[in-house]
Amino acid sequence: MSVTAPQPGFFDQPLHKEEKIWIALAFVWCIFITVAMPWWHIAGNQNSSSEFYKISGEHFSTIVDDFIAKNKTGEEAGIPVVSPPPGSDIFLRGQQWAWDPILDLKVNETYRLHLSSIDVLHGMSIHPINMNFEAVPGWDYVLTITPTTSGDFRIICNEFCGVDHHNMIGKIIVK
Ligand SMILES: [Cu+2]
Image (cartoon, rainbow, N blue to C red; front, top):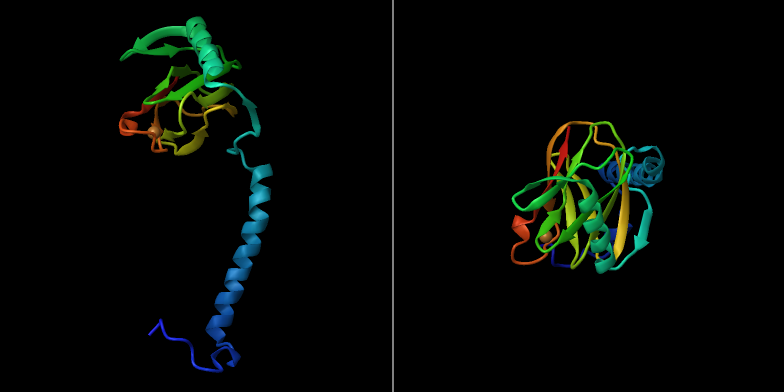
């Protein structure tokens, strides 16, 4: 049984060939992963930026409200739709239990997306492309994004944030 101690001298026995192969495989994998992580940080094109600023929820909300007032082009189910100019700073606010505004973006144009939460921790998960970022209260997290495919994308909250967490769904439209 696995709960009993090995026989005396167990660890002095020579290694079997299969054990040596598995140890070698594990070692090679460790080395590969150790090298791959910093390499992908430099070479990968889906890394989050390391640009972020400390900001209060109230301040972030004021900026988001200004952004909506300047760029609003419509409304869907009470949530404002904004069409900001390409290259500009755009904002996404997470709060219990909604993402706003709805971002109407142009394909192959680059934007600086500011992401934050004004209450508790939320997770911004873009479906169906499966890109995930944390929306952290107190921090404005800047992501340089270039949508490369058009369509309707859903922003699902993937960080449990309260009773209506499962209905916290936002939207990004790319045309
Ligand atoms: Cu949530």
